[in-house]
Image 1 (spheres, rainbow, N blue to C red):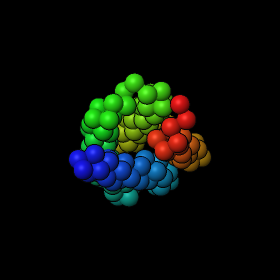
Image 2 (image 1 turned 135 degrees about the vertical axis):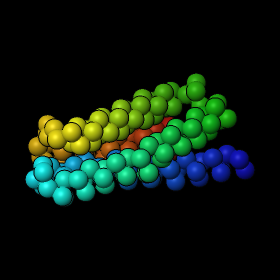
Image 3 (image 1 turned 30 degrees about the vertical axis):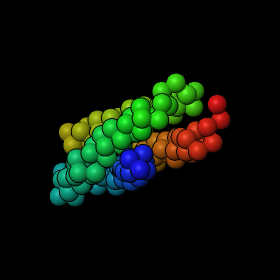
Length: 141
């Protein structure tokens, strides 16, 4: 029964985290389209901070904690599929950290990427998530 509660919590918080990973780069696109000294710019900075601090960071932490608890309780640390899943999740975590850094750069007025580049970057979770789901459900090795 504990496993099912851990798994449910893990899935719920992964969904929250993924929603943020899909949303934040899109918010960056809109942020970059407004004038740097406009009131809209300050509003976008505040939205990005709230998304990161209220949804994304807590969801990332809870997803990791529950996921590691599941892996440990089920003995997944020796499974090949788990190592690949772990690598993919580490990649998404690095992507999350990069997004947080880009949000900080935007708050400082640095606009390093184009809207097109941000739209392309926004596809990273969409490519990674199917891989993770297949690894967990199919467990090909």
